[in-house]
Image (cartoon, rainbow, N blue to C red):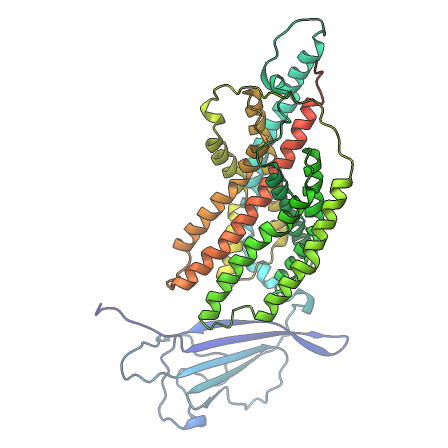
Length: 499
């Protein structure tokens, strides 16, 4: 368009802060601020370093503010690039020091403030915490707590009213009295029947325990101050090492569950636990990194680092998974509270709200709703190069996510058992794990609204990394839901007398 005008930021205002220690008489830089400005500089005669700009008033620590005209980009127009620096410290420049000194087309405007900064070295990163809008995070916490209270009320109603009444009625009946069983007690002889692909379920549960351990310890370390955003790559390094050593928990969980389900081939389950999820991650990451290599970008992970990751995987993680599986398989298991019949009971026609697809869509949206506001800040810090320094809020949201996944899985599992559908094993995992679907859909929305990515390779990188995060989120939330339902089913069927 002919009426469009373009302007350029040709002046930078630097404000350097450093704190003076009165005990040691030393000073440390604790931060700086940069403000870009667009200024159409004016001068009478160009005289190299002795040129005096009309827009730069001597004796001040910045350019003249009143009547500043922005620098417009036009054909044949000369542009003077300048900057000024102010230090929060005592005077150390002589009074006659030229405030504006030009070197070729660059103006150095050095100003001085008379007081030192109150920011201490240990608190230099608090600026990023203060810059964040804590009201939004508190709104996120309150929103999540409302969801938790709603689900807690439903679980309390089920546990304290419905279940208590059912268990009391079942136990008050005499053994000689003929009665018809109804509801969840009717499927007591099938509720612990082995699910389809139970070995794969053990693998996913073990991997979920590994993801949970890595995530919980990482957030706890960051909350306690052991991980700082100033240490670039430190968070990712800690996560990799924690993942490797959490292989012991993954192997123990999958091996122990495999034994509880009367499985015998624990070695095959251990092999799947050690390789299935890590191989998906490594293959996806290698392909994405190869694309970055192809673009000759400095952000590509070096080949040596990739080799170290493989060595950590095969040299430490895999042996720990097999060791954990061996220990888990050798650990005695608790017997199921009820016996399982050889012939499975036919499942009656289910109402629409027990449909697996509806249960997944409904069960997945509540855990996602508890974390989506905090997810926005995490994506912003990752893809828009901003610091994330509010790990206290993140820890609270993580705990709320655990509670939400557990409660929604228990509620839907109870409704399923009351409708005489005993196939709760995979359903409990997929119900809360479906929140990963909403996570990936939100990533697509964030890509379209917030990011201005036009290159195909950059888009592939974004969706590739978001796929990895969504897959890990599915395993984490699915495992939480399954463990909660497993405890719930064990609890209710051990509380009634079964003839």
